[in-house]
Each structure stands twice: as structure tokens, then as C-alpha cells.
Length: 183
Picture 1 (cartoon, rainbow, N blue to C red):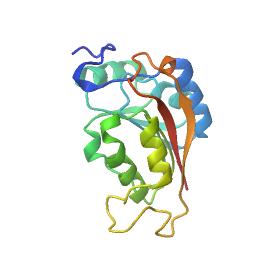
Picture 2: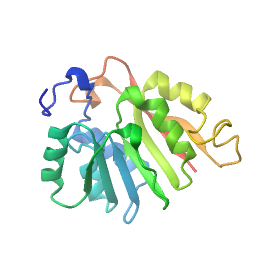
Picture 3: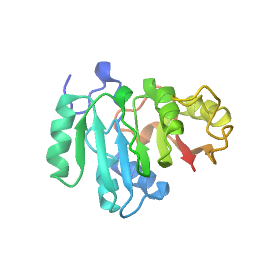
Picture 4: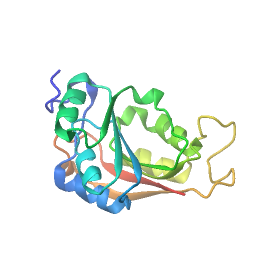
């Protein structure tokens, strides 16, 4: 499959630039923030994150998209070729603004809720999944207990903006929304 926008087996649903800019602006990310774009594709969110002044780490699995994104960011962000299932959570404070593969939703949210350094996350997800996760956040990856909020962590997990099919270059077959996680 080409990295140029066809969906194929990768299930890729890149955001349109105007919607990506809107999501980044609404995330509250700013200059100096360490921000991860998980499932970065060719940079729909990465580029506006760079423009915000954030220190950006873009993680992408598809090799052609990694090469394309490295060329597009020209050293202004770190682009990592990696599988999100092995996402390493940094020890220092960080944020996430991402449009990850829908199939990894629960795994990613669990990992993020377990991360001590997480300050916020704005994740483009299937709308139904976002609603379910906002009602009952999953058990964090490294804990046998319930969500971060129930463990005494001050998490707020809520559904933010709805994204219509027109928000995507390749629209998903289901409605999407932004899941917002805030400390």
C-alpha cells in the first residue's frame, strides 16, 4: 500500500489540515510542551503541533509515511518508526494529541492513564468508543485497579468535539470524536 492516502489494510484516516489545526488549538498545547503524536501518518497533527512551539515526537509504524514525515518536518520534530503497542511513556511531563489507529484505542488509553507524566491527551477516536471510555475509563496498563480517577489521580475523561466524515481525507465508516483526558 502506498503511504499517500489510500486506506487499505492499515485503516488510515488522516485528518484534513483545517480540522487538525482546530484540534491542536483546542488541546491547549503550547510552546515548550513535550507532545506525542501517536499514529502520526504524514503529519496532519504533527505540523500544527510544531507551529504551536511544542517539542514534538511523532510516532508512526508505516515505513513510507515515516520517510515522508521526516522529509516534511525537516528536523523540527523527532519522527520515530515504531509500533504504538510498545509506546514508551516518558518520565517527564508530556501531552498527547493524536489520531491513532482505532483498533488500539483501549490499549493506548490504558497506557496513558497509567503514565505519571501525562498532563493531557486529545485523541481522535470512534465516537462510540470515546463515549464508553468517558463513562468508564479502562484499567491502566500497570495497575490492577480501576481508572486513574478511582485510584486518587485527578483525571477527567470526557468526550469533546464531534468530527464529521468531512474532517478526514479518508473518512472512517463510523462517527469520530475527540476524547479529552485532563489531569
